[in-house]
Length: 235
Image (cartoon, rainbow, N blue to C red; front, side):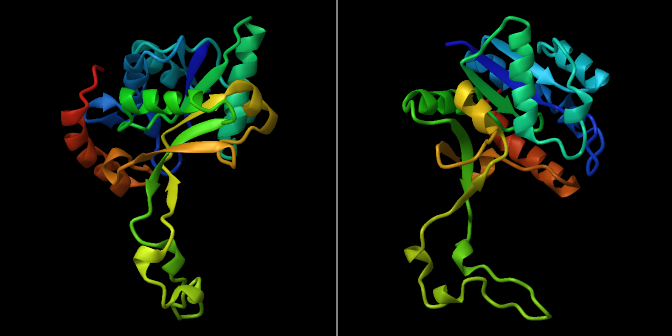
């Protein structure tokens, strides 16, 4: 099968300006998922989708292809990842290159490893009914016993679980926000990254970190100190 890695690297990050190329332990953070994709050996092409010339230049320096820039329609604050990925797939088809599988990877997924990517692809190939495979992290506390703040009070969101023991509640997970292995044709019909036809690869809390603010950035660099010792990446 033909496989494509797409790094989604928009230039207009607001909460952390220029986040996708900010130095992470001294190297542009986008270099880490690019290295993991390269080392995985899963891909016929590794490309970066961006509208930003500086990001494109850095991506090329680290071995990625940037055969075209992202359209203005998919470069704004409200552009969805699904539409961006679909745009890339269709633009490649215009160039005469079709891919059976696509793995969309976020540029700040510095903790992603080649092993993670290979496990995601293996899970997708093992079940031809799947549209997508992505990593998840278990919630550390049962969300069924969550509290909400309303009018100065803190009631339970699901009070029916007041007497339910934590160990008797079904474990719940959230999207790790790192990568999505996709079967191209089913994906193009829905443009969705999460859903009933998706499967998951579970990661530990040390293997992922969403980065939305400076505290998140510091946590990601801290986790990477431990992570890199076990999974060194050739940048």
